[in-house]
Length: 337
Image 1 (cartoon, rainbow, N blue to C red):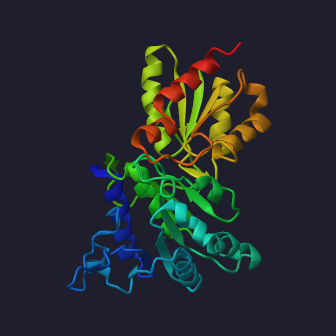
Image 2: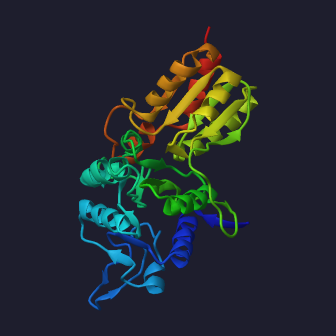
Image 3: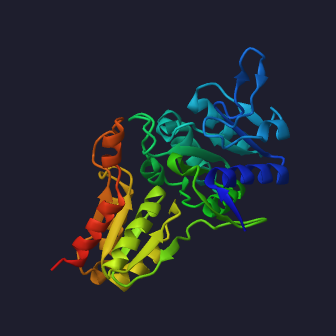
């Protein structure tokens, strides 16, 4: 297996899936660099995060479509084309701006299969860079995956590693239902082993990244990396944790969650979202409803505070859940009497 970045793994999938299926196309703001300076030529830079680099010269403007700054247009075009037999991969530059396309996502794409009695399919992928940690301010740093997860008919995917990015994006592009694919901005440069050749990870299968009998840590996205750091320090204290990386939040691997809770009886859920109506609160409610008899301590939730994301670097660092916050929560459930 080769070592690749998260960004490279995503780019590789789009290249291979566009090669494999001529119906796959990509669209979004500046995904091919826009018009370059005064020459009028495209830069093919791959957008502000470089994820779609190289697609334009390989597949041309008919399949790599730079769009106006209009998220409802981007998603509406991709959804409509996907209804007509294409497979659109639409990029929203920042997850915060899915709010501008919620009608196309929630009221249209998510409901076509249901309202047609299964006769219509909408195989569209909406890629959204999300999250804090890049000093981009309150309007460019939100998570939004809790909102998407709450919508019946939308699948919500959150890869943590480059390998998962490859396996889950391949599955997303080949899926016949609308998928919202969340990529954390702070992880684009992270590196890891990526399987060679075709690699697909089915939705609804969480990954158990660490095994322990004391506490179950349930995390998603970048928070999985922070949980790993916490687990290393806790092990030196004699505390051994299960680590569940959800990978997809809709569908949710409920069995993996309950199996871990039954084993440890203590739970810490780590979620970058703000606490009210978050994934952490939803999963905590699920555990209390379905696994209460296994619990030895109240479920702990580690989230960002109920406030906009700060711009100042020091405040943003304090805002996002940290490995130290996770360790504190784990010790709290371990010491509960």
